[in-house]
Length: 244
Image (cartoon, rainbow, N blue to C red; front, side, top):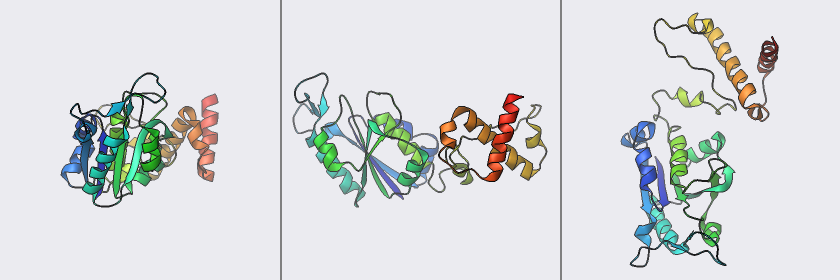
């Protein structure tokens, strides 16, 4: 079972999102377990202070090390085994599917959400194993990014999806975007390749459409993978069709 904890100023922001859909169902099935650790619960003073002014001045506040230390100790005790500490920050490496697969294969994960102007760098240097970003933009805190990463990990767990093949054929898993999808409803026109019942033709249509969509929208993804001779031939077809 995958054990996930979240250390944050407001862990309930992530918890609410994780109660629904795939993650909520997988939690009820016992495929993973979760525990949030609110930093205010680990503050040492009566005011429940978790932040302080930045050294040398400047705007905003910085999360202090002491509450983080206490929360991490509690998280480690809850896990009962060593846990990988993942810090959500705009200056981390961009999240990609291969990294999600690596995290989902772990047994114990502790996500740490920043707030305000960030976290005391000394605490990051001493405790964080992975720094991760979900994009080149700034949010008010790392709670929602943590929910995004947790969702992406949980859906890869065996039994989390209705069909385990679903995760295999999702966007980015093979280094390209997904093919167009059509709901099976009466009276609507769909591409003839999907209506013919020829499984080989359907597989080729889907592969070509995935390549075409990636080639048009995210060509950078194709530059990272080695295409087969058949896929290269499809790219040639797509190029000719785009010029027609």
